[in-house]
Image (tube, rainbow, N blue to C red):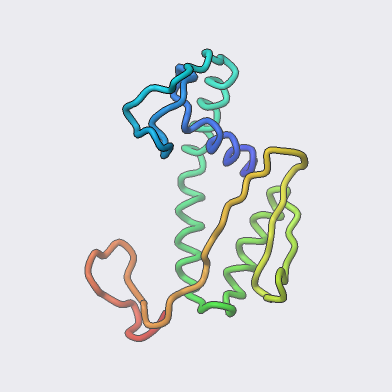
Length: 149
């Protein structure tokens, strides 16, 4: 799998419509206002955007499996041992270099892929909240285990 190239390409080009112009993102102008200086069309950017979208679509099942697995651990802060082990294995299997025990926290890690710039950071909060057990996909309070994270 090529996780980082997919994520990086998706992040870089999702804000660009197929015409290659900016707009519609979270910038200060609002979604309906055109940019003050239109960007030229870029066939390469358009091709990369289409490739990223196709790759993300192909990974939909894997992504859902990851979400379900991480949810199943339900580990509290500073105790997310299985969650960290699971995620760092996936990262390593996909070519990332993983530094564990960051900031003196055994379950904290930083993953790096490639070199140079731009540098893209993705954050994740992987711990459970005490007493917030909840069945997935349920819009009302319905704990899996009452009082559990």
